[in-house]
Length: 253
Length: 288
Image (cartoon, rainbow over the protein chains, first blue to last red):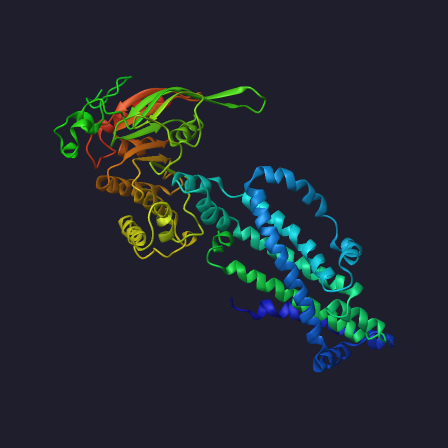
């Protein structure tokens, strides 16, 4: 993919305008507490220099990795099963549909009650937030497999195991990737929120700690920007899966 | 009427059944040569209806009888929506008839199996597998490994896909996809090919080209073929026998024998007469 100047310049111009307005307003109002963009840059460099920034980033990513990994281990097989076996779908779909709209933030009190203030609570919250999109997408992926492929496989007399391995799973894989993109997005939202409540590390903690420890709003904004950039990168990495040869068919034509 | 055109419910014996001394039957055993060998497909009194939206029964197939002999190419022609595809689904074993007999080589239908492979208008080449993997799909249920890959490449070459073995279906044109599908069917050596408007999604030129391809392969590898189509010329070009279906609820309203060698010319007095007769059965009167 080639980057063309006419595609790159407008978004850069918007970012530049936002920074310019921000800077102008801060200077004009002579705010004693809201930082200028430059203050955010120096604050970020300061955090990066003493190493605490990397610790917070690693802590957040580790929680997302474990929570999201568990969600995949549970959600994808469960979704395949519910999609393939209609009895399983009828049995489990109602409760998942009821749990799904509950914001993961609402689980925070229960998480603290069950797991205390440690790493397990945010991992649990990430699991809760990303497991439902994975289940739902995988299940609907199985349900929307074109019947002609299942018929063709049956026509060739393959066993149920082969049918599942060589037809069902590859047919659903693009939907699973969509579920992963949604799941990782929600997980990243939730880890920051969860870390604000109860922990000693992570980007969410960094935001609250910076405010509490002397109104360091330069570090608050620095953290926000870093969270945004990492979220974008996580989505980009997941999107790389769409380039896999065995799923390309879903995104062309 | 031209001499090759016979009307009415008097099915003749199939091409291969006309005499034990003919070439293709030289190697058959004495038991097989006995004339009571069952037809490849035998359908008698087949009916099927669906439950309509309002709860009533919607009859789709209303007593269909016909037989297809081993090695015969029979075309079933009918108007759109007459129940052709339902008939095909029953013959291939994907649906059960409400009543009637359906015997494959004298045996009750075993359900969908590689014994009879379906090729339909929409195509079912697996888009997540390469051409070679698609061709090996049916074989993998039986054997393993290198032999299958070699066989797949042989069949890919046979249908003109040499050099595309490792391509993915989305990289191929519609005509090439059809070739993949044909090769994937031929490779498992099905006794019967069920073709359900196989080429109707292709453009007109490719449609004509694929007819010739199919006939060329069928000359090399003998199969019993049942073609369902609304394209009278397609049937005239390829079939040994044409059955015309009535509108829904469908039954066979006319049968035509085509005792003509291949390759056939679609424009000849004989063909014109046949075409006119078939179109008339389908409710289309040609202007005089």
